[in-house]
Length: 338
Image 1 (cartoon, rainbow, N blue to C red):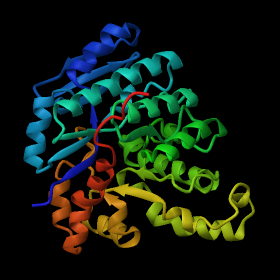
Image 2 (image 1 turned 120 degrees about the vertical axis):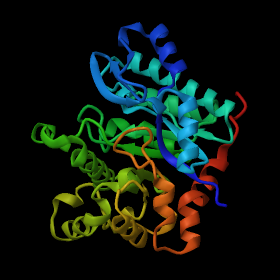
Image 3 (image 1 turned 90 degrees about the vertical axis):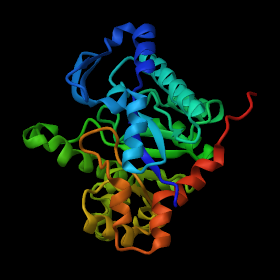
Image 4 (image 1 turned 135 degrees about the horizontal axis):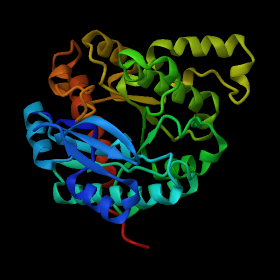
């Protein structure tokens, strides 16, 4: 049977929490149980709930993986510990600890886990250095970064050192929403997540295209989570807008159409019809299994969801494993120290 690889999962393991508490006490990092399955996570004075047990308890994670028929998790840090609003030195230190810990978990469970880094994005040159360290010294495969950095869009010129490094290293770069736009109008009904998350992913994608990031770095691709937000559905509007308006042409000499084909997506759409549309429009080779484990807005049944799709068996196998396995196999061991 096809080996299943979930490319979108988060971790803040108990051992990592203890290290962060010891090394960076000013973060005020605390985990307070709510019940047997959930806790409240407090970081830098902000409280998040619920933080599911599988996010920090590795034994629970492996049990949940078995129940979900997932063979491998690609680990990334929790958005709560990106810490883009902190002093860059604190964020860099916290990122290094989390990346070291992800690498440790991968080393302990190489057949069950792979990993990508978190970066101090408010200091792009340090982010580039940490990405290089994570990939060449720790054996991680890329990074998960926010859709914006404290309101700064990803086409800001300050991020150029990171894009240069990511392209050079052929990094698996996953864009995850955070600090979403329009939050003042999304306070009710959990709209900050229901609408804000896919909206901010879409803004990030538009900035990467219209800001010329993809044009300047032809080998650089991005994974846009939660099925790509509104990108697959509204890409045609971007193409039309570029054709008829001067504003989209400021940094982009060619139609956005060719750059839309550079985005990759996960399967987290919560809808069979929507996911089949995404696969039909983008192609199975650009869609990767994802769950957003352990959060309640995730798709813990992602494997069964993909297996139930009305698509070709070869496409199903590619989504469940094939393309992700090829990417992860590019760098299974850390490079020798130079």
